Length: 342
Image (tube, rainbow, N blue to C red; front, side, top):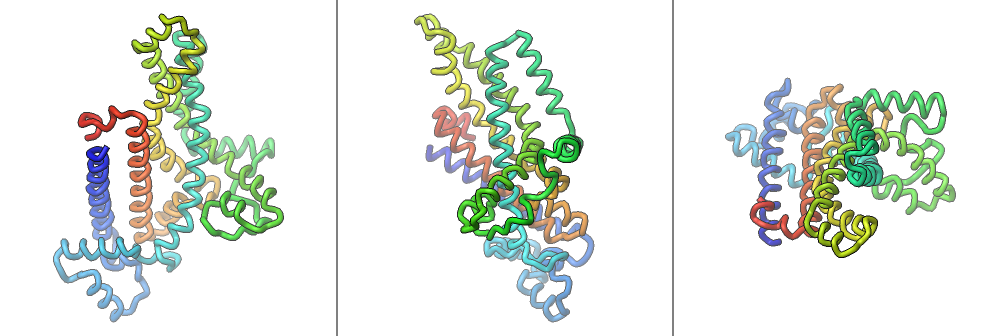
């Protein structure tokens, strides 16, 4: 496990190195002065610009400039937004919890719905149920996310009036932000109507979370189906069947547990897909997440925010990948070996 951990940390180090090199290089390609693109100080006086250039080693080599950029990153200084004049770190920390909340709920929905359906398709292999599930999952994966979001708003918000079409919670509820995760803030608050607020927040997140969860759920269907078919074809399942275990006992005692191990391995990859889908969904549902903020920054040509947002999202996705790898390695000791740990 030590070798596996060192390899993952080594991979994390070099990945972050490449990410910081990319974000640092973007400042040279954006229009305008490079030092302003890095810091966002568009209203600084010439004297302040000279001090900032000295702080970032503007007149030194590119290696020294990059090193100064890393030092500011490690100190939590990502510059100032050119649009709002607020530090990038503060803006990201105010928007990131909403994205985490949305993607987490969407991931739970995708797993709860997709994995059992995939297992059912594997159990009913080469039967009409299997064919229908595969056909529906293929259609669901092919639907564009922006079209699905608009269709969901049209049906469930406008025509049926079941669910709200935008926002995170109704304006009538005033919840003090403590953790940034709205559900936690509601539970920790002293608001006498916090349970009504919790229900209102749950209703608001349901529609965008289901929209985001559709494509990953169809992927989980295929992953769970393939994993279950592999397990059912294994020798220990055949040996257990020869001992007289019923098919239900094989499924619930042995097959599901072993098939889940292989599915967990791909959860991190699907989380990256969720973040990508959430960026579009947040704009359509006016969800106050980092994806919506990043796209608005692109529209406003806020170059400092674009750099910081890309770095934050990429780092967050990769950390989730690392965390998922450790969970998979703890469940499957073979994953810690040289072949799988590289």
